[in-house]
Amino acid sequence: MCDADLLIPHVGTDEAGKGDYFGPLVVAAAFADEVALTRLPQAGVKDTKRIASTRRLWELEKAVKQICPAFEVVVISPARYNELHAKMRNLNRLLAWAHARALENVLARVDCDLAIADQFGDESYLERSLMKRGREVRLVQRPRAETDPAVAAASVLARAGFVRALARLSARVGIELPRGATHVIAPGRKVVAEGGVELLGQVAKLHFRTTKQLLG
Image (cartoon, rainbow, N blue to C red; front, side, top):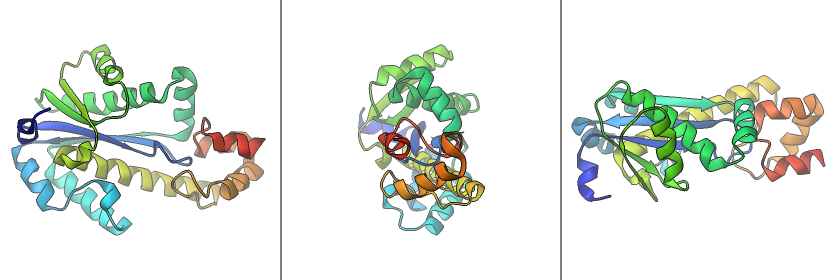
């Protein structure tokens, strides 16, 4: 990838929830044209790891939706995630499937031949996933891709979608489900006590080692 790629219209993709025991996997894709590539940084859109508060996250989500000509947010519920992971047996394949789904939905609405994604594994997974859907696009994967405005926009959309979905799941089970993969044992035990492994599978990613601790 060269610096010139950052100056031409392209789609950025990113995900949230991959490392969180509770909650869905959310993948977002955002298309940035020449105007958006300038306006997104001006609006403060950046990698969500650097966003200080949830309130600021909502503000940036609104900005992204106003600035980007096209975007897509794919929310894979824990139940669906567990089903897909059991079938694919590989997290990178699952990620590639989700990124490809978000990408193809954006590419159906805009004329664009470049996509930039964060490096999450063998890029051939994502390339093959796109080819199966008949999508031809130059795909660039690189570490710390969130420095790119389009990827940063996708990062904001994905994180906002994850936070919102996790809150809904918490309300559903009547237990505050924390983010991340630490401090999850106590709430996990409450979920199991309430509805067993069936309920746990509705709110958590069961392939995490945490599941064995909760059910062992």
